[in-house]
Length: 273
Image (cartoon, rainbow, N blue to C red):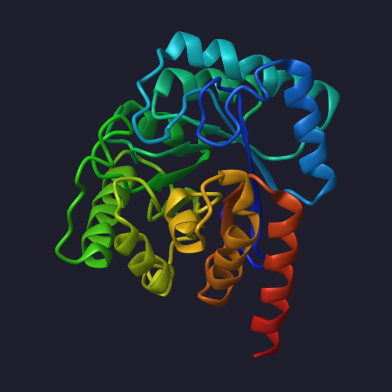
């Protein structure tokens, strides 16, 4: 799936959870989830990322059965009522959930644990020949923001992701089916997030497509004196433009229209340069 990426891709977030940090509870019903998916498609989304387990700081894990109950009906409904072809990503660390989502019509896996939580998810990606996004996280969502520490965050996150890439390749995942995500906000301090954003080109230099996920995140609120995540749309768009200029190819966002515009303008400038 990640062969020959050119224009930036926008991945729209569709959380079918009651407790996500920004939109928890808004799309737990089929009708509301479908309406949001339809809206994102009209705004130019390239991938819809569906998750049934919140990964906000402090979140407790959700069973595979409950995740499946939440995500599979939504995936099926999108396929039946909106689009047979729009790529759908399943946001999970559990191979059982990923398998059910793929069977329902999802076409790639977004794993915040990069296969560390459930190694079978790598074998599943290999068996089904689907793309998988490997993200860096220090700790787990429930404890990741309890005093994270790095000596050199860019070097350490890069090294971790290289290890995860090696594990995926060893499990049979095709190189062209792997993308990486530095995990902004996942076990990171504000200064760590800023260092990673300042050096996204280092991740691009690995040769693997990079996914950037900054959407509405708290560290930007501290920079802008804003406490409501929904008020950080412009801040998110700024990081999207920055990412495009450094070669990032995918952006996971809540607000598709605004980030589509930011990505398209930045891409045009980058092409001109």
